[in-house]
Image 1: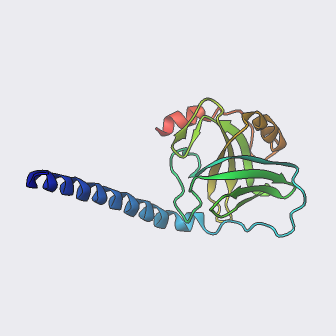
Image 2 (image 1 turned 60 degrees about the vertical axis):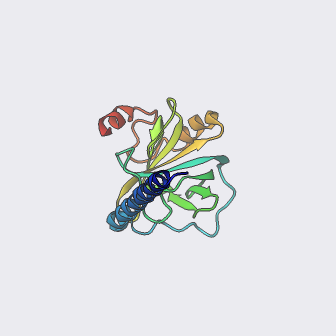
Image 3 (image 1 turned 90 degrees about the vertical axis):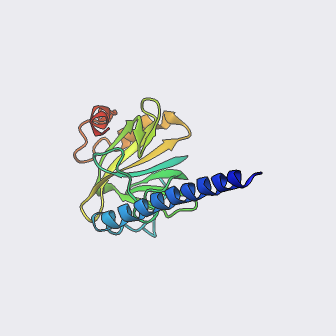
Length: 182
């Protein structure tokens, strides 16, 4: 390898590392900006009974600030994708993520459960993601999504929470709203 080739390789590596550093800095800054709005997520109750539904396995695709399907939450590991199982209890929904913290969604905080074609920058076929819209204790509304291994479970989840406050439409018609967010 000639001296010029070595210099080019080193410059490319330095530029790449610089871009990665800028991306990480942007993610941390987003987390700082969102920290107050997100606050502390609700703790998982210690005395949960047997689940009413689930556990159903899949991929937790993340959480976004509602109504934007792309404004990913960057506080802690709240927005991190992870393999997960989702279970419904009389008190709420538990998203048990592998190698990440559990997410507890109290039933009274749930405003809608619906299917969407995308969330947090992940786009799939129609009705590919089960999305739970809920209010954090801070008052901020978020959408949390799970892409189930078995998509046939979605209608059961949607009907289980059809009585959620403020949930007039459960079947993914927010897709028009999503198109406006692009």
